[in-house]
Amino acid sequence: MARTLLFLVLLCSCTALLTCTNGGDGGAGLRMKLTHVDARGNYTDEELVRRAVAVGRQRLAVVDAMASGGGGGGVGVPVHWATLQYVAEYLIGDPPQRAEALVDTGSDLVWTQCSTCLRRVCAKQTLPYYNSSASSSFAPVPCKEKLCAASDLYFCALDGGCSVIASYGAGSIVGFLGTEAFSFQSGTAELAFGCVTFTIIFPGALQGSSGLIGLGRGRLSLVSQTGAKKFSYCLTRYFHNNGASGHLFVGASASLGGGDGPVMTTPFVKGPKGSPFYYLPLVGLTVGKTRLPIPSTVFDLREIAPGVVVGGVIIDSGTPFTSLVPDAYDALAAELTAQLNGSLVPVPPPGDGSAVGAGALCVARRDVDRVVPTLVFHFRGGADMALPPENYWAPADKATACMAIYAGGRYRSLIGNFQQQNMHVLYDLANGEFSFQAAECSAL
Ligand SMILES: *[C@@H]1O[C@H](CO)[C@@H](O)[C@H](O)[C@H]1NC(C)=O
Ligand SMILES: *[C@@H]1O[C@H](CO)[C@@H](O)[C@H](O)[C@H]1NC(C)=O
Ligand SMILES: *[C@@H]1O[C@H](CO)[C@@H](O)[C@H](O)[C@H]1NC(C)=O
Image 1 (cartoon, rainbow, N blue to C red):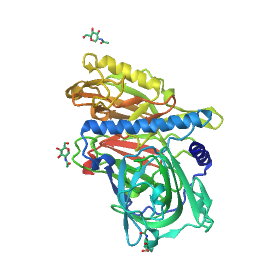
Image 2 (cartoon, rainbow, N blue to C red):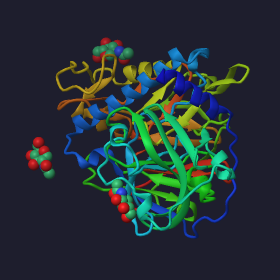
Image 3 (cartoon, rainbow, N blue to C red):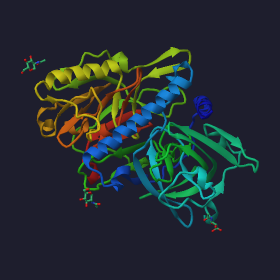
Image 4 (cartoon, helix red, strand yellow):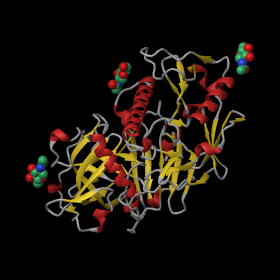
């Protein structure tokens, strides 16, 4: 039943028209501090990895469930939020109320749970629910307004309001569209948002935050609504970062140049119609000095049936670990196995505090920096993303570290946030380009 609803919703979202209007960039643009959801807990490195692995598994399970229930192999179904990892604080309303949102480049709607939420069907959150009656700047969006139709799935409520539904890997939310004054670490914006009154998601998927901020390509995302032509984020190191926070910049404040290395740029690939995701033209991989024998076509988007587009490489802020299509993963694992010969150690047994499964490549933790070669992701246009060991190897237990790149689905590859640590990445929407630069993110 739930699956049918989910699929219906996804079907509808595929046919949604995505166009942008609205001017005004908020002048200097918006800036917000990004805190990793696990920063609030007191976790060891291995526990952090274990949590991230669990996150990845949960997400894959959702994708598989959709694929088996969705007809057409489900391969054209977008992989929406199953778990997200970075939280931004903001203020909403007048007088301002505090809220915390998970930031998601893979969806559009900005939403927060509202005090009209029936407690039994809303997720627990750390801060009080937002109360629209206590805010003088709140206004409901009437169903008749164009803004309402900008939602992927909406219907007219009995009172003439605009009810919206959004579905994710983690579940669905129902609410009504309103407008409010939002205030971020720096910068303010008047935004249409979902005041959510019904939440059916996996326990824990909201991580105690109040809602989501969508940064996708659709019309209701924060990026589209503010008319921002670009946004950037810089994620601090996963481990030993001493509580340092990364940042998200939307609009004029988003720019590279303060980092350590050269700025690399590659064009975005046009994704399937209606997809909120950002696709990149990955063309190959190099490990150490060896370019892997992978045909670049394994990374292409392709149409396997009329209207069913599969494949491609997504850059994602919400998924921890990178996954590659099997052809690419196998070539990477084979080459690393050869290069690490002599240094490889057995995968720590599960249940022994190990964070990884069988088949992983592991070395002694003290050896990582000495033996693990640099891995380079080559993008079209000569943009090379060089990953030091710490961007693709993670501690599995006290003595062992393992590669944190996984064999993914048959068609699609995904670049996760672990790979993006200490890298400032810029999504330039006006020019259709993605840029990145190595950076000390805590210093931005
Ligand atoms: C974190 O955990 C360690 C080991 O379990 C403990 O020694 C330390 O006091 C904890 N720190 C905080 C802030 O809870
Ligand atoms: C919301 O705010 C109104 C107006 O201040 C107040 O009367 C009401 O009790 C509040 N609701 C909740 C659930 O706090
Ligand atoms: C790995 O090392 C062993 C012993 O040092 C050697 O016999 C073997 O040929 C090496 N294999 C590769 C693939 O380098």
